[in-house]
Image 1 (cartoon, rainbow, N blue to C red):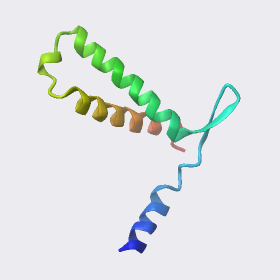
Image 2 (cartoon, rainbow, N blue to C red):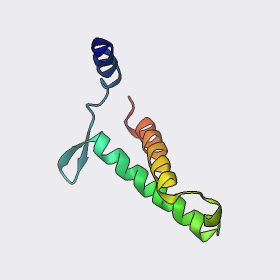
Image 3 (cartoon, one colour):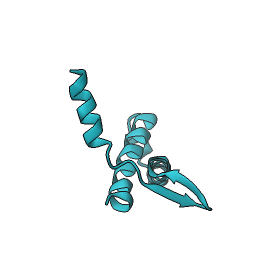
Image 4 (cartoon, rainbow, N blue to C red):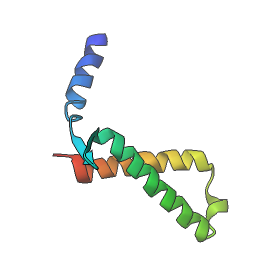
Length: 82
């Protein structure tokens, strides 16, 4: 079972070597993408609050975490996927 998990990690994590330059410093792209996702999730939740739909949103921390993950995957696919 351990060899299967190791094989899965090697196959799926092969594309994680992208670097992003921010003000001359190199960051791995996996650091940048969750930050972009958290920013987009914060904008989405502020939109929900402004449109007075907040009482209909169940748990804020669960929704924020899910939106951050969704936006991070979308941003990774759009900007960093080869």
